[in-house]
Amino acid sequence: MDASRQVPEGAGSSQESNASSPQRPGNASPVAPRNLVRPLILVLLFLAASTLVSLWVGYRLLDLSLLREDETARSLFFQLRLPRVVLGGILGASLGAVGACLQAFFRNPLAEPFTLGVSGGGTLGASVAIALGWGINLAGVPMVFLAAFAGSAAAVLVVYWLSRTGDVVMPGTLLLAGVVVNLIASAGVILIQYIADYSRALQILRWTIGTIDVVGFDRIWRMLILLIPGWAILLAITRDLHLLAMGEESAASLGVNVRRCERLVYIASSLIVGVAVAEGGTIAFVGLIIPHAVRLVLGQDVRLVLPCSFLVGAGFLMLADALARTALPSGELPVGAVTAVIGGITFLGLLRRQRRFSAI
Image (cartoon, rainbow, N blue to C red; front, side):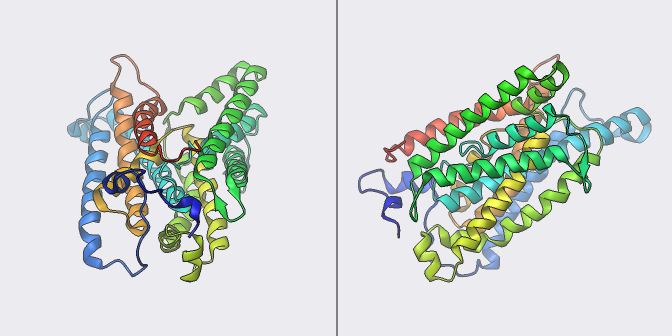
């Protein structure tokens, strides 16, 4: 096991470590079906409750009787309210799953798309596409999605290259590289906004603050063309990620193709985050707080944490968007601002608990 990833003695109590960081599993035995029932029931109940609350609240509370009698109310519900809730669920599920994947892969509890610069790279890619007027579709896929994917992939590669020394990934360097990449991407976005025309600068601003605004399901179908393969990859490699939590050498000795898993993590994470950023903008910290919440309730098994983070992330962002829609009496907040406030406070708490990473 890599020495740089071992926790020094006296760095914190075992209780603190269990609450704030992914633990190394002792084996890779299959998860017993009975151990899956309770977690699935819990997360499905949470998702169902979040969906109902998100559909009910808004500028106007949902009245089911109007849906049967009023054509205007029915049109508003199926063209605005329902697509927005579905989009929020898709984005939250994507970011939650990617956060759980990155934390397991890097063995770092503070890893997530925003802190590693992946979201920043996707925002920069989408901003370039908007500024250049790339509104065309390539094989049915919007160029903005592809540009955001390219930006996310570039950010992942740069951060990983900067933080890796031989076969060792330094946790402190990883976060520092992510922060620097985010700063560079933010500077690039500001520069593009400055030189772009007014209408495109406003479009780019939407990406930087993070919003969920959609009419109908057309854009959602286009997103799913790219998201479903990314989701499938993450779910398919949960066992390998579970073993990688023990370290690369241990995982390799148990039959994990580390380099193949590494490539799949890069591709899937970049694809999912790129599409999420292209559609919803920079929605920060969902991938940080959701896996931690899931581990506190359900334990450390990555084979449970990743799929449950997918479902809990969907419910969380639905609720965050419901709060954004109702927080102001005469308008709404960007959902990215809501998640940034909640996640930022959580991040500072986790950072304090991980003070043993003195290299940060």
